[in-house]
Image (cartoon, rainbow, N blue to C red):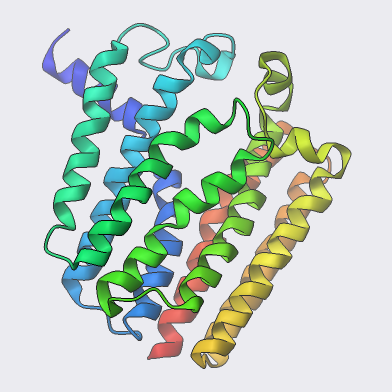
Length: 285
């Protein structure tokens, strides 16, 4: 295998060719960066957290494929992933994940001690999430914590403290993650039943669509509470209203539980996070 072919496999393994996961991790991180920076975060803070998001999501994808390598061979959609297909050795994949995680850690070395301290649970959450599908009934909640841990880190980096509003923002992200990842789990419901993997789609059963909409509602209510706590204005709340409209559009996509439309709803969550961030930025201006 030449260098070009190996780099192509690394690209697939880290999902850098599929940026939706990066965006779903990036938007809540940027919510935290902007609020903690009172609408004017330093450019180097933004750069550190954007690059850190890309690196940690990539490392997480590698660990996910390593953890699921025996499951993936039984699912048509995942049979050709680099580790499962045998084109990348499991040990080599772990070294790649470690390299990405190390680069992410090096990025935050210039920051304060509290941020460095919080980086350890962040790494643990990212590394352990793939294994929660074996024993945790709703791994999507764990994913929401892992995907949102950049929020308290952003506050720590800029305020040397993690105030209650940061944790409330993190809880809002947990509800959003349960919503969008349940939509994703609805795509793989039959495979998960066959393989004995836990997911929120299986836990909620026939109430899965209702549960998704409740989670969207809870996320928006908590985000509105955050807005009230920080004294946000009309643009922020307009962003939340637009996000609510996007959630209603997702209801139309998932209500019949068809694989293609559920997956489309999952991918469309990028816009949910984006309009909230856009409203936040405009409000500070």
